[in-house]
Length: 549
Image (cartoon, rainbow, N blue to C red; front, side):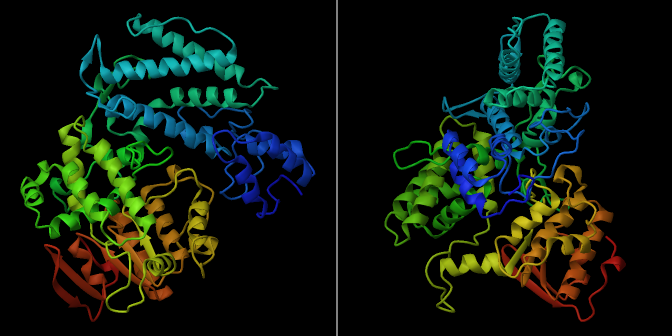
């Protein structure tokens, strides 16, 4: 059995189980490898170094290929964070997760101290944000210095600016030479230092990609990334990739901040004792699901206190309403697993988002987000009134096998390649199509091994469409599929969807604010104030190439 990606997939569960947890039993793993592989040392080093076993087989590295696992050659200046982690998505994800959580804790809300951070307030000579970032960068530099066995030259935030920059740049250069040495033990210290190095080297790119509510001050645009006082907290006014409908046909009141999505990945769930549940997150989908039910509860309630709160609109005391809903939920006949899911999510939302210590604009942002929530899942339990058969379990199977979904903002998994993103969807359903064939059909045959960050917006949307089509669904739902694209690329995507409908005999539903494209449809259903206002049948649908807007 060879380590060069030819081993049986039957071993994956065994390998993964042996490596689960924060402190896996490496001795047991070593024994297993010795018993089942002809080249045990090579296999052991490969998996312990962080190979992502859920992805497609890892390619054999070429002699000059960049690899944090091998430490052969670092990528050129200006490379993206992901390019430092070829063959090592596990360490990349850890680095990004650690950095994003640290940035949030010093710019918005610190879970450990349960306190809101006034990021731009001045602390001494610099803002809270810049003081925190300096201390964080200093910690990262100390990790690198300790790995090389050299003490870090003492620096403080009030040191001479040029000397601070020099210490950072000199230490980084020294590490880049040191890491190329053969014989370095690739243990946790090795990866801690490497992750610290990549974080410092690509810090501004990480902020732009994962915490875009932090920006570089205009006067610092041309300064060193290690300059103190360089950053500013922009608050919840930045909108890039929330997955909601943000386009030229919408007013500002309809937009939702990036910060909303990012914080929901940061805030954890909370158990019945008020204790944080480790390794959990509320998530955007969890918020929509839980708060959608709270919204329905509010709308149906005749409780005078809830009615009074609803009248306050954006200034509602949502923690009070959530508490009332949780009390009501305890009396409902709902499966325990569903009750626990809701309770844990809602307790986390109440504890952090609607905390007394949270800034009012952020509370209002989430109340606004709740009001945008579509109530699509509150009938998830029990039987359908029409068929008497549509139970929650059947709904899951129906969504998995019969529904394909194309999001406005792609929602691709960043550490997977194009083909891996598509393959992932095929593993969830039966009767799926071949990913390679679908990617060729959407014109991405030569981009299969690229990561999402290496694609244009139109190419990423085509990946999202290919992922949905590969499930071979009966119904393809497209939420503003061109909302984040330019005119030309948008037309290409609409052409692809129109061809999919015609050639693949698939029902395609496009949700859009752009009424100009309605002539391409067989049927147009118009909504106003949450209700159907008109239905139009197009006897002769137009080709998208003949439609202008």
